[in-house]
Image (cartoon, rainbow, N blue to C red):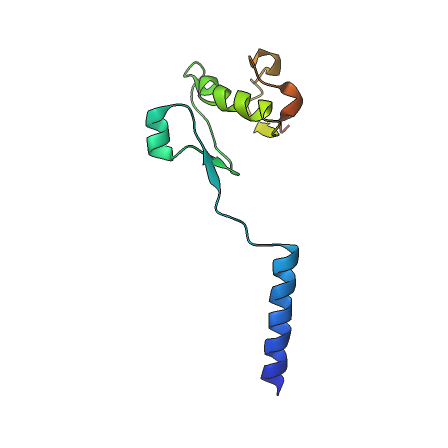
Length: 106
């Protein structure tokens, strides 16, 4: 009898969890705008997190600027974690800065 009650409680709990926190869907991809990179990565993960790192002057910003422009002009929020404190938002040509969330951890 206890195992039936346990099964009922577990089924109710699973149903409740699914209602309040449905399973996440597999993230989509956003094209990078660079054909070779899209072939390798399949695009930027969305939703997702991408780490762009390298020496200054390697073109990191040029890699993400096209997608920043597109996403912000579609009205989407784009958070950026600027751990090195080097990003200057007014220099992001064509990006809707009102849709950019700049995070600078101390």
